[in-house]
Length: 53
Image (cartoon, rainbow, N blue to C red):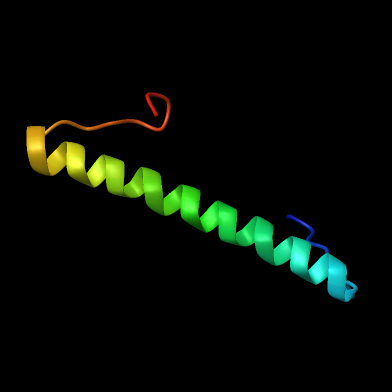
């Protein structure tokens, strides 16, 4: 059996801004490389792995 813990965060306004910026960067990066994988498949029918990226 696995035990899980939940923690609530109460960030300050500055910390909220920093967290939001980090999430935006992660989202951008994910979408960028997802598009790269899609384009590689559509153009050349080849798969790009996460390792290759």
